[in-house]
Image (tube, rainbow, N blue to C red):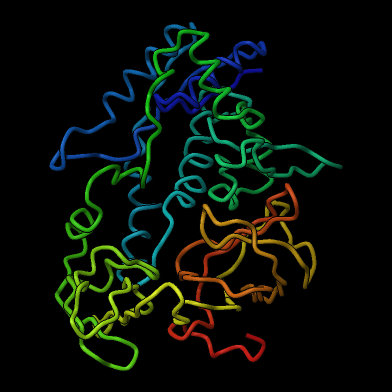
Length: 369
């Protein structure tokens, strides 16, 4: 089978290339440049990553391709990212990047190059039961990336291989070392791809200049000044600059609400404060891996952020949204982030969180809370 691998210059895609070749596929590598960096925040990693990708393909004897998808990324991912922050929400660009670039633009380009399937170094698995493709969690739960892949559908999964989804990360490193791959000891990338290791607020300020505004407590007490309400997210405790006040308890402060129109942050003290707690959320229109919801109402587990343990909940499907009630209170559920639903090992799909019944979440308090 002719397979086009999205090769990033990291160890995961390198081992994916190795495994595909060992399995007898006619594998080729395609390096995607999704961002144009002007270098103002230090050296860009794109050139180094591309060199590593070329080296891996050369060592394995597989053809190398490179494409610049920066324009598609700007239009399909980054403009939405800015719009969400401008509206006071906290978006997840990795979900949009997978949906719009890696499993759309890249898939289309791979087909133009004659590939029958695409592959990536994501930690996830795919199977097919009774003609329907399912997105399954990776064997390595600590690395599982189905949260970021939940918006994929049948067309994408039918065309996709995840070669390392059945491996622990430690085993991926072992295979890379044993094969002498130049990426075997390369550090994993972290953070949002186009921001990387740089200061997030400084980066965002280039595109969304902020204005100083008030930081107040829920009872209206003025406790400080911020640099732009849109730069902060619910639950944030670092970077507020209001510690050590003589009229406070000494406990850490947390962002519990934002009023972007008034450019105001609401903060409260202590881990036990109730201002971030919610039991109910409403989403935007969902996407389903199977192409349809399991039922009009069903029980499952959910994540409202990537590293969160699964939370039991009841989901009610409406015409254009989900109403989700959790068995236990959830902390800092954030509009703009993704709600992702699971039935055991199977990722069902998900949706963008629109509002919650937290005090500043936008929904009326739930009587069952």
